[in-house]
Image (cartoon, rainbow, N blue to C red; front, side, top):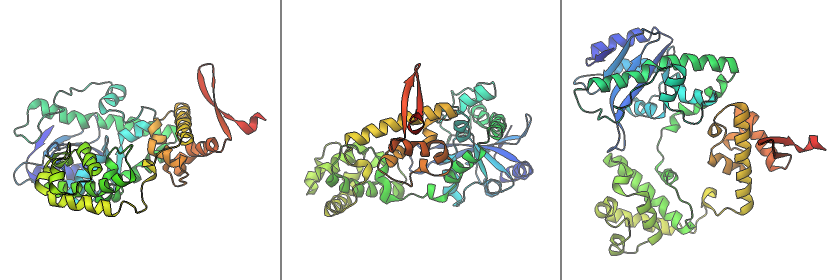
Length: 387
């Protein structure tokens, strides 16, 4: 293992890495007090039990990452990550380019039956027959010098990733599901996945049981909070918590005095420092409250819709069990709600998901199949074949 603190050292390592079919990649960053996470360390490992490994100190004075970015964009080298989204987002913010091609071991593990969002430590234990010391997991990666325990922990994040990648790749080839992972990676590597639409900021919040009038104000306040958080590079919650935002939207203050007295919001940074803009957002939301656009997912659900969702969840459970994949890979809660409300572009009705789950979901909604319990095991019954 080498700790790379000079650009020339990184350049030499990346030149060697580009001669291999793949390289394992991970990052350490600090994001607790930032809107955009601060990259502090990059871990790299070349193939082989004794393949070269490196920790790239991106905070070292004069360190330039051009050769690293060239490696990440080299189409002849697969970049192997575990749970790649946040790593990719960090690199995308730096260069507006997405590493390619990539392989995400967490996605692949879901397809191979390891469960939803399986942890790296679990895969290390089950596929590499090893255990990792996680005591340095929450270390401050921005401080220098790095402790020996920190460096050992960081290195383990790519050392075993090489073994996991090769074993999952072999399993996917055996079960013929490589295309399933490819479909997921296409979404993961699409630039729009990482572009922040401030108009959609409200979707990050849990908004059950709010009125259409309140929702129109929530949208405007969430948009303002997102814009300010980006400008100031601070977490959204530093300006105003979600509960405070919902309280503010529901109170709909008409004056600055009323604004400052809103419970959970009146003493927030958003109100104290940006009260004029907050009032403008409230007024903008109120002016639009009668416009069409209250989202389907927030509308009160009638009992039949709720029952249909529950049936589809049971169907998902049965199929996931039979196929050997994580339930959430087949359909999320939002996906199921989309099917119930008749959205034929819902994710489970497209691509490989339609063949595995979506077609059956539509049959269930049309009353063509039933779910039964026999010998303590749920099963799918084709009603037409029963007659």
